[in-house]
Image 1 (cartoon, one colour):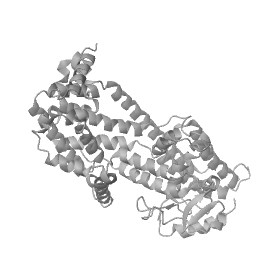
Image 2 (cartoon, rainbow, N blue to C red; image 1 turned 90 degrees about the vertical axis):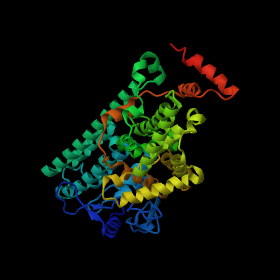
Image 3 (spheres, one colour; image 1 turned 90 degrees about the horizontal axis):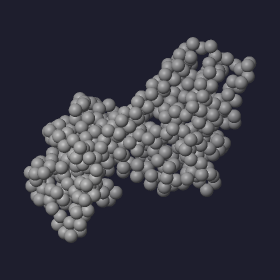
Image 4 (cartoon, rainbow, N blue to C red; image 1 turned 180 degrees about the vertical axis):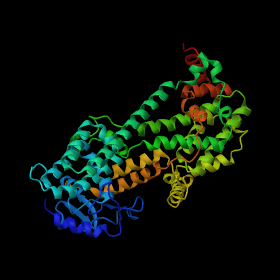
Length: 502
């Protein structure tokens, strides 16, 4: 491969000052490990540790002010592959593995990486230099470990697992320590995939048990007597349990799922859809569904009570819960609660709202005001992020973003820049920015919830039946009668269609 010597020089320049750690086998030269995000990136989004190189140093890769900005797909793939003298920077590994799936299937990328390794190290040759193989093997193991740890869902594809096994077998030269390290990596990967499958099954079970509250009310009226205040009357405790659900669901979202969401919206190069032929994770969609469920649960709890005084108490309770969510840094639950309280069946209950002290709610609405592209929320998010970076406890590390807006930001970043430049090169400048946003999310999702779990409250939040939109309107009209002819007509229509359902 051309450019090997320049890559050695590049490696020497960038490795200085980085944190070094090897895989769990003795290494003659340790692997460079760059600091975690967001330290890796400067204010302009570029990694300051990137390879100091001139354009002619490495064919097919182009730099601007020492930052990699574009390259051919083949050159970028070669840049991922370690040699005896070179190991790619971790920010590059993450950014390329994340974005490459817009151009090539992960299993095809793995196949190319394996092919380059076999070619470069002449592994197919029975007379391959065993000492050389022993030097390169730990570096490839490090690369494969980073891939399996950061993008484990790629390996639900049998073709990926096949390539992984073939490469690790080829690199095995009778070194017992290396074999043990490979075994450890594989076992960790299989555990992750097993846990994911169990989580998906549990979600499916929860979703199948959730029914419309009106149906339950008709068939088992006694089972509907419980409401949120009988389950939990302390706003701080409820905010903590909501944070448990948020962090658990966040933890299962793989970084590649953001790219999947983009791929599903837009045709790829040559109309290839890189996720159409293997089982993809759907944790991102499940998380969005949780937001919708929480909004509807809040609206249901408010519209359900017959007495105006009780409805007002529920509204005030949820305002306090939302405020506690804000203090924790749980912006997703906060926005879901505000969304539920702003649904038309709830907002039209003027007599009920007349009994509510709304000053605290006004402050929360101001914080989540969508004007100026959610300026107030983004300011609060930056504050929470800063607190998280300097935190000494898990409690202070919690940052749960308003997820729909995060997806929207990533979507518009993708829409605003082309994947390829006019000369056909991959626009890597764009993918640094994309990786920066996704990696910040990756940092947030790794936080372990510091609060005690309350199974009874969690069970209620996840499985309590909720009203459909029509049932919410019906409950709202039953509580405070229609105010105009349009509402009267809708009320009559809903009564006949919903209450007469068998």
